[in-house]
Length: 101
Image (cartoon, rainbow, N blue to C red; front, side, top):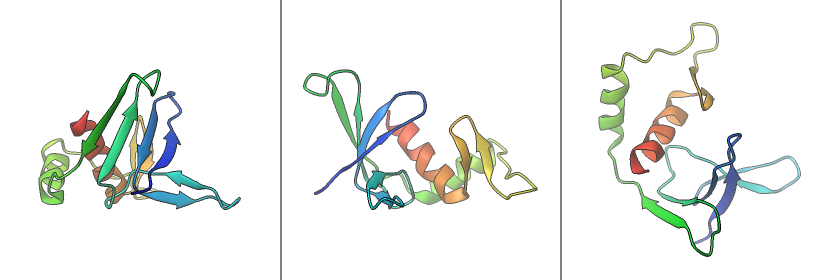
């Protein structure tokens, strides 16, 4: 399996099995509804890394979104969070990662 690197604005580093193709041809790791494997790197990768295998059913996360009364922005239809503006699929993928931490 090949994993792709992603670094958040906050500095947290991840390797994941899904990617986006950047304009320069580079493949950057991304969280989406197809992401299953996530490695969170804390500090020195030779000492501190954690792998998560995500198997939370999408319907359970959709119920969580409803329970929390999260609504998309009326102007752009995205969910604006501290992790950026997300589509519903992106929000679901992000919640899966958070639940796996």
